[in-house]
Image 1 (cartoon, one colour):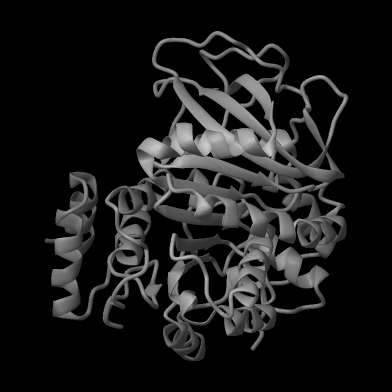
Image 2: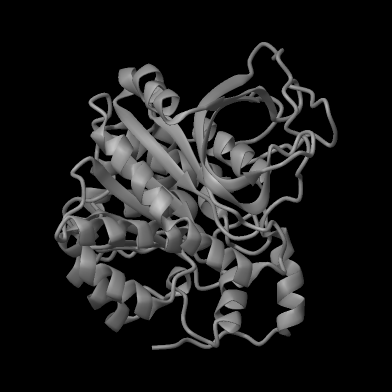
Length: 411
């Protein structure tokens, strides 16, 4: 089934998508010092990009001949300097840690060193958060955005970034698609390595836009190799605005079986970037832009036990409603609180009476409703039992969410 969007000339839309990612490329020269109140993000970066000889770029948008590992430490400016969801890029080298995101350390690692990083960082946490970025992302943009997500999402998990060879240009869409395919084996192997670590008990795979395609392809391959099974440690697969053909997604689900219950999708029917992608793909519907209020779509999601959360009309700083999962303060807080509580995003499916502006469907127990209430108002809860469940969910969350519920419901 296809959906029609308001016509906008494709060229104009393509120009808008240029805002989907930042344009910085050469400001990753390390600044050893930091400032009081700054946040320190110690991440492992795994990439299939080719190294760059340009100072401050580190890796280019070209494809590398091997998988590279780096331990990258990012200093995020103090809370009084920026709002949650915001990435402040250094305009030049050296960056100012009091005002901007700056890299403190970039240390290349061999595979053994990467595994040792799990022992050192993931060991005390026992949890790993893997982030796979989307189309039109430079290496720098991927590193600093993930540092923002890791800081703003209150999850005690070791951050692992998988960055693939995006050309970092709005005109590189087809190149990026091929680069995502090129990186499937490397991502699959990385997930297998992390799953094999005795110091890791739970993995969340968070993928954005075209990175959702890459993530699902890697997961699909893994399931095929293991006779339809995925590692138990891979507890959550979160697809934010996934740039995946819906028919292709259906075939991917056929391979992963019951593991589809681990999937959460954030969608938005007003995602302009995915509208461009749809046009470039010959008009085929993108998964991240489906209307989950459609009964047929809703039934298909429920059948597979998938959680789908509609973020339509949620504000996003990029103007395209394409990255609101990361730059919406309430969004990152809600996801982080759920994961920090030690709960899988999957669980018992809520009743259909829980229509909460941002509609949660599929296998969600609380996370969809809580995020929806935090992002969108007013809330229309037409089922008394559903209203009571929402209140209990918010009681277990922070007072801010409880206040949002009382305000929106008029109670």
